[in-house]
Length: 347
Image (cartoon, rainbow, N blue to C red):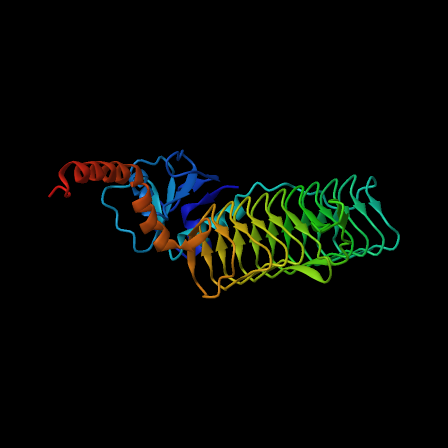
């Protein structure tokens, strides 16, 4: 797809500074650029590249004041991140799922498919499944008994949705996600062995949720594991049985959430964060990557860091001290030596 700067500005409700007829056909990183590309400046750390980029068009905020001449045509917008997100969808190169129903897919006679549903080859749709209008099911997808899919759901190759789970409208589930596998439930026995606890619940995913590749969401022991509307999950996340994640919470890759933990809405959780089970995380909590959360967070909008996590600013202040501990230890040892020799510390 090729668009002129003026056409892009019209799409974004922006204003053009430079050549309104310059054409672009793909996005680029600001430090790489390239003739015929569009890039963006949303973080001041990258401002130096605005003056050297070879991109044809540069998206900037309305309040941006350049310190040097910029060769690219500028498009000024209200929100750079939202604008570039919109354009990436326009220029997007998503996996294409063929329309229609493949003759090589298995669809149980009792399954109900809505209008304009696509099912690619080697996918399996079991008995009692309901698929909403406009949903697209790629190849090698498994949908278990009595699963319900909403409208306009996209299931990429290799997705597995086990029996009785429910998926809302407009959800996007990336390759090799497993929804509804058994929760990790085992009862210790007197002889030291473990007996499996039946996992009889399901997973409920509300609307407008996106789940990254390789993520696993376990079914509840009883009741439901629940992912609320607007949640965005990165790749390779483990969500255990009976967890609940609140609306519009985002979680980065490799996080792990133990059973029955409740995470509030509008939380932002970094990569590799670990949560103990049976705790509650308040709305708006922000957690730095690689932190460990062992107890409930009751105060909304708290920022945390460390393992076990403490207040973000407290951690930064503490880190400033403990990275100096070797030097402080050396000084303390010398001070002790002086005291022993002189009977009093040096001035």
